[in-house]
Length: 333
Image: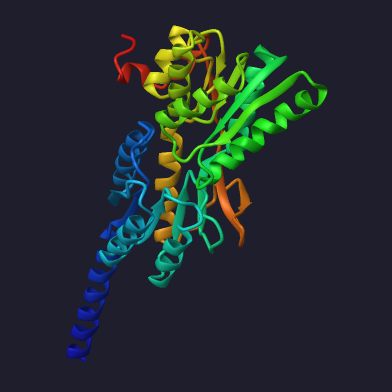
């Protein structure tokens, strides 16, 4: 009887130790970034790592530097190193489907971060209302200048957000185009989200038309390039220019009067939401805060889409300053 009691106590002790080890096991999160061409991605990376670690996670992070194959290889390394969940900012929205298939072969879920991965059994999508981002840009510029010639410089087609933003812009502009109030004199997607692309496309637009009233740039890097081209033609400050991301140079350009507005997407919100969702998925806990689903070409993907806001000269103090952004960059005391 006594040996059996010892065996029972020993068994309970082993179960307790195993349970404690399971409880103490930190969730390993693989965070795969495209590149750091935009300063916002440094902030995403740092906030995501900090938030996930505060929640008890461990983050493995890497950047593919716009290389599709490299991002796939980085995903495999993370999975081989025991990642419990992958969070991916895809280099290419279509090709990243192979990363999802690879992760699922390891029984690891995938969250698409800010850019929707297409045509696969994606587990989760966390981003901003990108159609709304386009609407905010077009609505703001068209109210400031409801009649005139417009230029549209959209992001790369490889990023599905470019299409969502363009959809939002055209939803606002199309009625004005049909009325004849607005004429789109130049309309193009770029290859990359960078300043040189914005500069080159703006130069082409200026060759097409010597009278431009507004430029819808899909992000601040493109806007920065467009402003440089406008400066060379002595037009900076007289042409309305939109952007997105509230980058440091964009804030400076808005304060100087060269850029009209930017769309600010609170990075703290997406970093917190993605880290929280990643840990819940890894622990097989229910995610209760999804607010809609989105079609990715194969399935309706559970999604959390966060709101954005317009930043202009009049409300900088209530948006990026109140969020600590300008103090962080020593623009205000």
